[in-house]
Image (cartoon, rainbow, N blue to C red; front, top):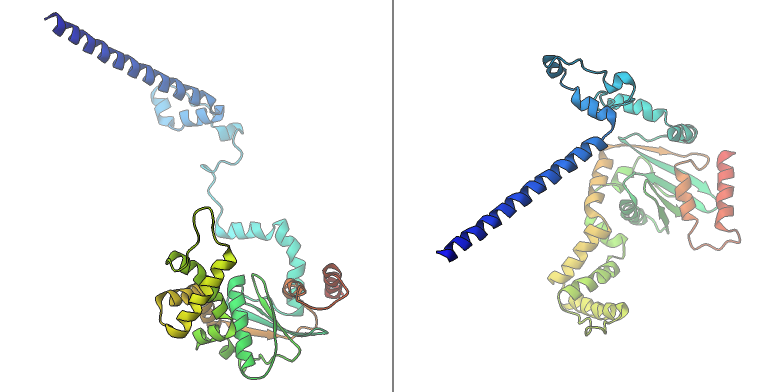
Amino acid sequence: MRFWNSEIEKNQITVLEKIRNRLAAIDSVATIQERLQKARPEWWREYVGNRHEGQHLKNGLTPSPSPVERGAIQDNDLLNPSPSPVERRAKAETSPELQALIPLFELQSQLSHIPRNNELLIEHHESKEGFHLLVYPFEGRAVHEAMSAILAYRISRSMPITFSIAMNDYGFELLSDKPIPVDDSNVHALFSTEDLFLAMQQSANHVEMAMRKFRDIAVIGGLIFQGMPGEQKKARHLQASASLIFKVFKDFDPDNLLLRQAYQEVYEQQMEEVRLRQALQRIQQHDIIIRWPEKFTPLSFPIIADGLNRNNLSSENLEERIRKMAAALNA
């Protein structure tokens, strides 16, 4: 009986300790909340306390002036609605960045044309370096890289010609020593999606790109041994082994799933086939504007400057050549 009573007393003490600890935790939470409430700005506490004016009047209290009335809040998002799209556009048009670009827009419009959302601008230039064809699809560098290669391939089928290609995020350039035959009669055919897959295969060295992709696929598929732990093979050794397997599949098993996976990754990831097809479809619905400006335009200037890094023999450095181009543009 004494043992039973001692066990009950122990259980009671344990329960009381749990209740005491729980109450202490509640007090600590309340203390934290009180501290957070005091840490808030004065205008916020008054705003939250006075947001129900009817409750204050019911209790016989006179509501104090709001933070906006006292000038504590200059631009409160809760009270001032967000600007409309028209207001945002008007504000953007008065921004210093856009004001700085207005002279370039005016010069572009004077020399050539400013393309709209439903237009594709193509410019022909002639310089001492050759004949320049500049296209501005505004589709990104990856799409422009594939699109420029396809355009060069389709032009080369009609005549023997050699191109040098440069591109950036909003356009690309084809440079040749011969006049480039792109006009209203053939421009839609050059940018069509017909035989796009064949053009992608012929315009780029897709076999070499697929061979590089095949290395990772072969490693994941277990076709290549990467080496023992701590003694990993070098990348060039893995590439050599993958190239041998790739050539065997290409010659004797062209329908191999791993081989097809390598080509698929090249077309979808590296050549952006889906985005390229969508871009060409949009171009077919656009108005194509072709201009022959006398000087390089502001839109063409960055692409031409990027193309100066080609492997050409010149005694002038890159900065001097860009400075001469800028002087000719402002002349």
